[in-house]
Image 1 (cartoon, rainbow, N blue to C red):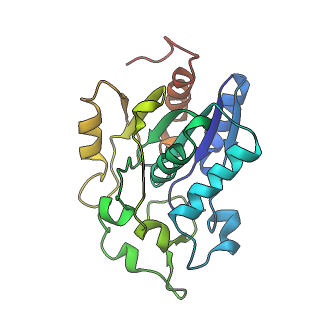
Image 2 (image 1 turned 90 degrees about the vertical axis):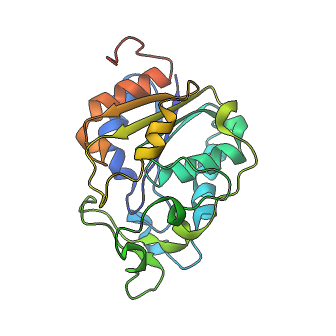
Image 3 (image 1 turned 180 degrees about the horizontal axis):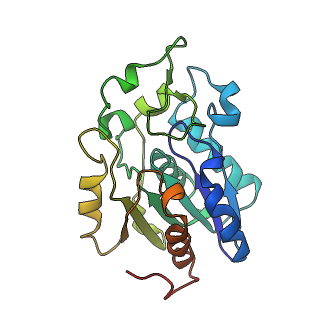
Length: 231
């Protein structure tokens, strides 16, 4: 049995993983789908001080409270920043990492530095001055996201090679202006033998578009379902 901890992308909540939770549980795995501070049903906690460290601690707190020591951390989009930080802070609690059309930062990186601003996206902070609105192609349930989390640089002390496996899933149908901000990362990782890399014919919200394919990949990552995935 594996323990999956699912971390959503910017402006999204735990509901974005609703297509994955029950299938994984039916295969006997524990699944925790999280919502980060200041977003979705936790939007009432949004303040100017909510940053990347806050979101990393959100996940670390769950791992510690639930005594999880074998986490398969799954991050979508911005969630890749979060799971990388979590793995660096509490490596003893992490087994594997899965990035779903997501950022894979190195020390000193920020969302602002890695992702093109999509016009004036980061500047559309509304009345508060510290909340990034959802992009037009995001799910209708998406809410504002704390600006500081996109601006803060991540601080890492190790690398990802210490974990049992590292998986990257790339969405081939880009909705981003100027093409996918993850394209160059995908091309680099697919040449790296230390990574398992997949390209799926879906848009950025892979959980909505190709949930069955994602479940197969996650089962393989957990050490189950080998042979079920056609490469």
